[in-house]
Length: 110
Length: 116
Image 1 (cartoon, one colour):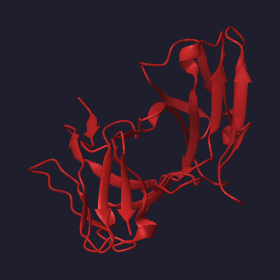
Image 2 (cartoon, one colour; image 1 turned 30 degrees about the vertical axis):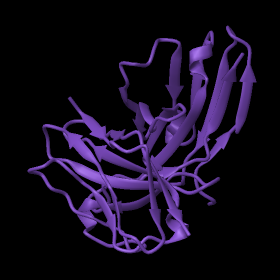
Image 3 (tube, rainbow over the protein chains, first blue to last red; image 1 turned 90 degrees about the horizontal axis):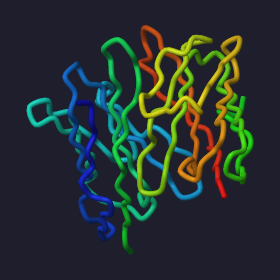
Image 4 (cartoon, each protein chain N blue to C red; image 1 turned 45 degrees about the vertical axis):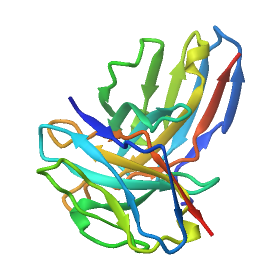
């Protein structure tokens, strides 16, 4: 089965604290993983993708095929990081569709 | 080009009526996706097009739903005989799939449907 699991609906941290948003996936093929973010009153937008291996706004995510995880991390949270975060899997076998997790709301407290 | 646009932004309809939504993707984007999102859930895949060809349709989608993308440009999503369970945000996204780009999706603002 193709599935993306984000176990936390809400994560609250204080400003300056480290953040880790969890994402686990189930996919028999070669996965491509993404993190999308939705700030208040804005549309969904790409934050980062595993294939680029880049850091965006201080966030990084490493694909761990052994643990089938793609956790999003940031060492020092900022108030402007408060948003809804979605992990997404792009299927690459035959068709190219995205499977999204249920999302985690990150609240960074002052 | 100001990004993906969707029309209308809000639609209130009575149960049993038909509704049609429109999505205008970013120019030159060859892929167009439709999603449905309900409260507390992530975007749920409905269907997608490559140019004008509809390549996949979710098995969760009943035959009351139909989508088109004539000429590979804008797309429409029609829901016939709406039910209260159809109330949701309908999202459109476009991407360009090629040798270099694996397809970052650009989302529209969504159409919020309320069925009374």
